[in-house]
Amino acid sequence: NVKSPPPSATPPLPALPGRTPSVDKVDGFSRKSVRKARQKRAQSSSQFRSQDKPIDLVQLPLLKDVSAQEQPELFLKKLQQCCTLFDFLDTLSDLKMKEYKRSTLNELVDYVTLSRGYLTEQTYPEVVKMVSCNIFRTLPPSDSNEFDPEEDEPTLEASWPHLQLVYEFFIRFLESQEFQPSVAKKYIDQKFVLQLLELFDSEDPRERDCLKTVLHRIYGKFLGLRAFIRKQINNIFLCFVYETEHFSGVAELLEILGSIINGFALPLKAEHKQFLVKVLLPLHTVRSLSLFHAQLAYCIVQFLEKEPTLTEPVIRGLLKFWPKTCSQKEVMFLGELEEILDVIEPTQFVKIQEPLFKLIARCVSSPHFQVAERALYYWNNEYIMSLIEENSSVILPIMFASLYRISKEHWNPAISALIYNVLKAFMEMNSALFDELAANYKSDRQRERKKDKEREDLWRKLEELELRRGIQNSDGHNALFCTGKITGPGCHRKHFTF
Image (cartoon, rainbow, N blue to C red; front, side):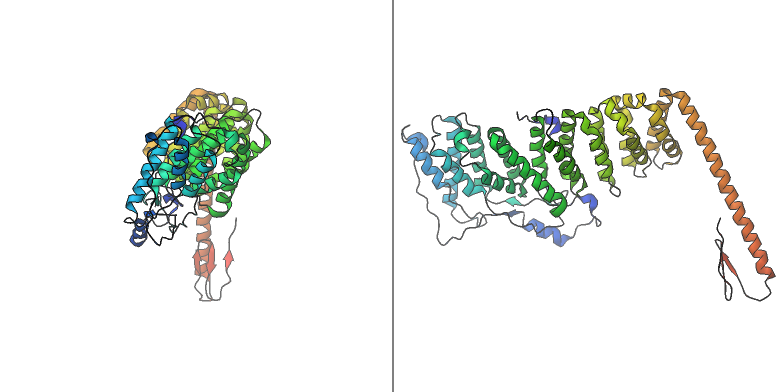
């Protein structure tokens, strides 16, 4: 069964697909020349047609105006007419014929939606041919390597007035009650699906949204293509992570995968587990993670709900790929980690609590207040709090030193207030252990202060000693003493180590 992900777990389509998220840009000010160049290519067409003379299509009668016996033949003729392509970059060419094709496509959409008995065996190849002629094409190369999804507009397909209706027609065709996969599989085959997947790299978000629906319908109706579709999505992701770091439709493919994972039978096959660990987890490493992170996190959580024993390798994988230099990505990781902890089994939590809370302690100590704040919000989650309380004897010693130190030193008063609440919660959970840790922390701090004082006193004595030696030096050379080193003309350099 193929289930659709719940609305709450399926975020809206990103309006601005791109290459590199703005958080990784060194220069926050985009050049005007670059922006103007992008604005100029706000619309382009990937359909090229050499045109020597204007196109003139024979205007056929409307389907509703002919008898029921004549409709199937007329339907096929209209499908053949719609294989004609037009140049949408030339806005003044073939205006009448463009409008005629648009109205014909509209008529075909209504016909497949409302009519019965039109789907004969001869119809399938003509439908697939018409759809293939219109949607399959070589996508234009992107010339905006510095694409910023937060500022720049995506490149829209100029032929969308026709493409949109072709996609709508094909979706209605696939959803028709008369549709027979056993007949259609001769024409909707692996080659067709492969070309369909390549179109997910289109920069036009409207087209990717239609493709998402088409691929979902094909996956649901063609059982023999399911393994092939999963394998090709696997290949696209691996190429994206390890080679190009550019593919516009990652979010849409992950959204489809979310519903596919929901339908996996238990126990999970080894290939599905390998896909999770070897393909989905490495997707966290790419720079454009923000464009598809919500869909990726949803897929991860679906796997863990299916098989809780995968929790440990998933969390260890997240810790392995944890961002070191990008605070915005760190906030995203913390959000995903909370979603995982919401569904974690207590027996699995025990296995990963030590490395997990060592990381959380580092996040709480982060000078970036959003990272610290997101980590501290874990203590507002009732289920996570219950897990922490059950294992407070392990977690409290890991967290205490960081919490106590940051409560005194953090520059942001809001973070200090949150830490105070967390310390208060820990004290209520296990007051005896809390008091013991507080006493140990204070004694450790006293020992550190004592060592610091002894070190300062020792250096002061050394400075005085060298000063006396310098005064008593009879050779007239001046000695310069600086931070434990004496240098001067004719003098040997001396180092003091302790």
